[in-house]
Length: 204
Ligand code: HEM
Image: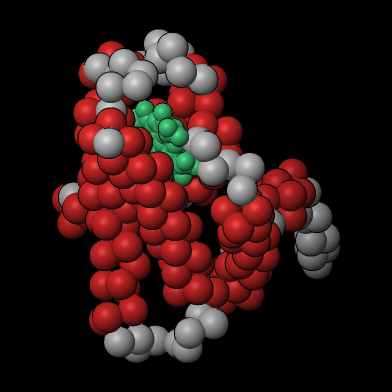
C-alpha cells in the first residue's frame, strides 16, 4: 500500500505541477495582452502570477521526492537530474528533467529580478514557453495518465489557449510601441542612401 501511495503522490503532484505551470503562463499572457485592463493594475494580479510559479516549483519538488520514495522504479539523484539515465521511459523523463531546469531558471531569475537588468530578466522569463512545452510533452509521455481523456483534453486545450494568447500578446506589443519598426524595414532604411540635394549654382 505504501509503495502505491508514493506512486499516486508522484502522479498527482506531477499533474498539479503541470496545471500550475499552465495557469502561470496563461495568467502572464493575460497580463501582457492587457485583456485584464490597462495600467494601473491591482498588485494582486501580478502577485497571483508569481504565486502560481512558486507553487509549481513546490509541487515539482513533491513530484521528485515521491519518485525517490516509490520503490517500484529506482530514482536516485543521478536519474532525477541527468537526462536519459533512468531505466523507466528515459526519453519521456528527459523532457521533465529539462522542464525542471527551465522552471528553476525562471523562478530564480524572478526572485533576483531587482538585481538583474531588464533585458536579462526578460530573456530568462521567455524560457516559460519552452518550460510549458517540455512539461506538457513530459506529462503526456511519462505518466500512466497521459492517455486519459480528461488530462489529454486539458493539455491540448491549454496549449491552444497559450498559442492564441501568445499571438495576441505579440500583437499588443507591436501596436503599443509604434517606434518599433520591423527589422526588415530598419535594414532597408539603413541601406538606402539619402539622395543629395542639388547644390545651388554660384552666381558670378
Ligand atoms: C527532474 C525532473 C522530473 C522527473 C525526473 C520526472 C519524472 C517523472 C516520472 C518518472 C513520471 C511517471 C510517474 C508514473 O506514472 O509513475 C512522471 C510523470 C509526470 N510528470 Fe514528471 N518528472 C520531472 C519533472 C516534471 C515537471 C517539471 C512537471 C510539470 C511541471 C512534471 C509533470 C508530470 C506529469 C503531469 C506527469 C504525469 C502523471 C501521470 O500521468 O501519471 N514532471 N514524471
